[in-house]
Amino acid sequence: MDKLVLVSEADNGVSPRGKSAVEGARSRARGGEEYRAAAREEYAAIRRLREKNWIAAHIRERRYELDLTQQEVARRAGTSHSFISKLERGDHIPTIPVLKRILAVLDETLLIGIERMTPEEEPERELAPAPEVLSA
Image (cartoon, rainbow, N blue to C red; front, side, top):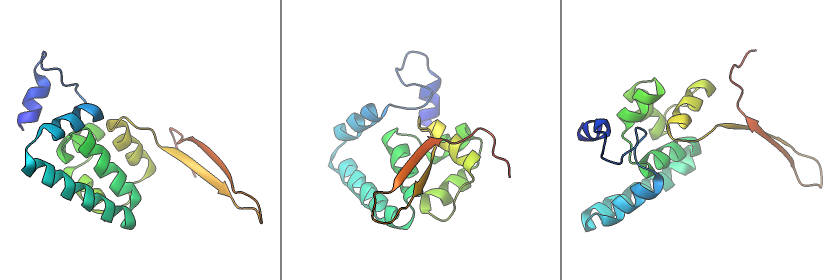
């Protein structure tokens, strides 16, 4: 709640999106040993989560880098806190439109990739931004 108050103040230097990744890292680095220990634990949890669900791990890590709460991400992405919590635990896979909104809050863009496997050759890969409207 304190962060929401700070974000609304005009001269505090914090963008409406939260801190930049660099500012977040500097802020964490200035924290005491207890804070640094908590950061080590968070990154260890993210590494474990990456083995279960790399999308969840990526979202959690990026949110942490930007110093955003789950509530802030949920509000800005137009979803619920419980949805973000389940997503970050690796218990839920979002739809493409919801994932695009979450990534936009995290200053990222969703790309869709296709990989064609050909015998005895390097795979061919094609990447493109996810379309605005998906239809069957």
